[in-house]
Length: 128
Image (cartoon, rainbow, N blue to C red):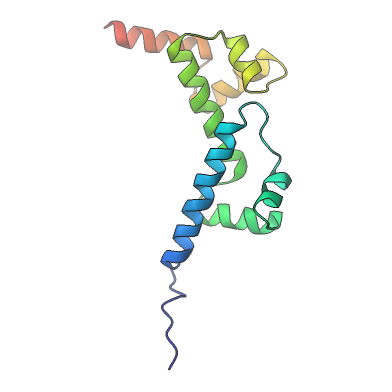
């Protein structure tokens, strides 16, 4: 008699663990490659899988490589803005944006506010 415990509709613990490790490994890669993130194809190659397989595994985990890159960039930019140690231009440059206007546009898309408005809102909320 064969057991079907390895193929549950919600995915097996092994698959959930693999997805968790994959996301964790990608986070580490993003943190160690600020401003020069590997392309999707380079990432797939680093994990010894096809782009299609990586895309499918990320989709199963509810994300995509672009979403992960955007989240990392947004979190990093917010951290830099709140520390106040870098200008908007320096943050844009460190994240690999070719133009500060492109960074401002991306930041507004991510957070709903411009970098200056975000920083001002934080300063106002901490002063109150």
